[in-house]
Image 1 (cartoon, one colour):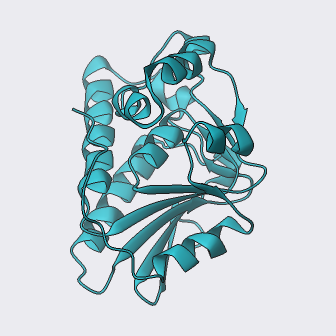
Image 2: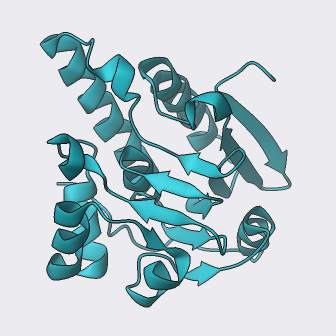
Length: 207
């Protein structure tokens, strides 16, 4: 498990999925995203799991696609990678279980798309969130362009997309991007998961 891109723990009725690529800043490589998709599919069908918590290792939640790998993909492989991300994140949005993003640090690009697909987002006091694609001349392909405006409004979403600026947890709370700030964030997420949450609606569809 220590060499895996993901670590999975079961806490009573909650599953914690932790991205575990600290040297790569928890980037979502092709293999990591595929492993995550497979892991998620297995958890979604388990009747004993009532909540799924996503978090990261070290000071990073997730940093999006692995750019060094992305530039080497053929057009066809890049399209497959984009579709895999869209489908996987839609599984999160459509999940029967309550899904919680426990944002433990940097949450960038596709990592933010991942958090946006969750029902609830909680963050540590030192969390940093951003959609940096504009600095690289690209835009996210995993549903963030749809989910972010629905969550915080079009004007605020455009500000984050076009400026690629970093925002801290306090601003994220003020604009409604996260629901609370707490430390340690995973403990807070587990407390939420243990409070018998009931998922009644899904409002984070990407299309």
